[in-house]
Length: 65
Image (cartoon, rainbow, N blue to C red):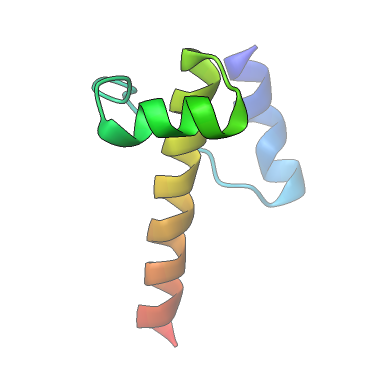
């Protein structure tokens, strides 16, 4: 499944980055996200990883402009 997503992403102008999810479940934010949104631990980890990626993208865009 991951390989198919990585192959199709460029068709939609999406850059794929592989990340190591290690340590995401032990963060303070993890428990807060699980309670706030009613997510299981895996979905909460994916959410936190996505937020970090979005924050980095925004910072990169600010530096470019």
